[in-house]
Amino acid sequence: MKAPTMDGSIACGIDFGTSNTTVAIARQNDDQITLVPVEDEHLTIPSTIFFPAESPAVVFGRKAINAHIAQEDGRFMRSFKRVLGTSLMKEGTHIGGRKTKFENIIGHFIEDIKNKAELSADRDIHNVVAGRPVHFVDGNDKADKEAQSQLEAIFSAAGFKNIRFQYEPIAAAFAHELNMGYTERLAVVMDIGGGTSDFTIMRLSERYINKPDRHEDILSNAGIRIGGNDFDRALSLKCFMPLLGLGSLWGSKGLGFPVTPFFDLSELSKIQYMYTQKYKRDLRALIAQSNDKILTHRLLSIVEEEQGHALMAAVEENKINLSSCERTTADLSFIEAGLQSYADRAQFEDSLHGSLESIQTTINDCIMMAGVKADDVALVILTGGGTAIPLIQKITRRIFPQAGISDGNRLSSVGFGLACDARRYYLGLN
Image (cartoon, rainbow, N blue to C red; front, side, top):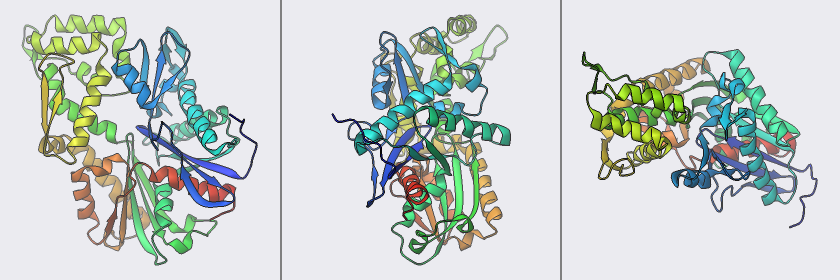
């Protein structure tokens, strides 16, 4: 295979997501934006990584998930984007008995994405527009700026020379604008991903694509650190954790079994920390005083057998299925022969009550900051996997009753739009 050639007439957009990642390429002499196959023929790759115990070769995406499900010896991680801007970035974590910084963990993933883009383009790529949420961290401007600086350093270490950031919902708007005609429309972009929910109100028209500066068209941005991972946690606590002892009694006084292990097991970023010898020892001590050993021994089995991510994969699959089905069944025989969990859409929607209230408040804040009325919005662009949830679509139609709904390319529109911005910014093309 021939080595990539140096060429400054190419740029890319990378949507590094909490759950999935995409990359798209823009070229100087080509009108087309190209989404890159990032895992076999797939245009998206799960943001996951697996460090095999017996090999230096790191594994990514679906292959990482399969290695973990097959219980290969090693360290599996996902949702590591949520670590940016938090104390965990400084603390790091242990992989193979060695302390490892999260910038190196995330760096492995970003470098893999860059290599795949360059392999597809057959040349080096130095210019990138990277997506970012409106807020990496809620209510903390210092941590938010630190998170972007950390991500910029990671992209730089991966080999990018020129790095620019763009809000993810604005990128989705750029992607949509390419085929919407020349009539101006006031649009709201709702980007509900794995880690955050982000919103932009913006004036869009195909005739605006050639404008070098779009700031006057962007009326407001708002975001909150609630997303698909939080929906998974809510469903897990509602329908799965009771099978493991949540709500059962504990101790001689008949108190409720402590809830911390159930919350830890329902939070993707915390599962791996349950596998330490100390955590397992403390959990055994708790379960020794459990009043329902059948249920709580299932909990212990999951932790001791390190099956937490497999359980949350079943939760996530149920969440996705509930967008098209009223009731779902999860096969949990990997925990106990014949064990199943049942969930219906009403239960799931009830579990989302607090999260959806916060999301609606953020949408209303975005409308207020834009200085418009909800009835003025002519178009709602839905992107991110969370927007497939029927209740979220119902809420959207209630808030914006006069608007049309566009919900195509939920998982790839942000990456595509970031490449549109890269083409405008680096290549002088619109």
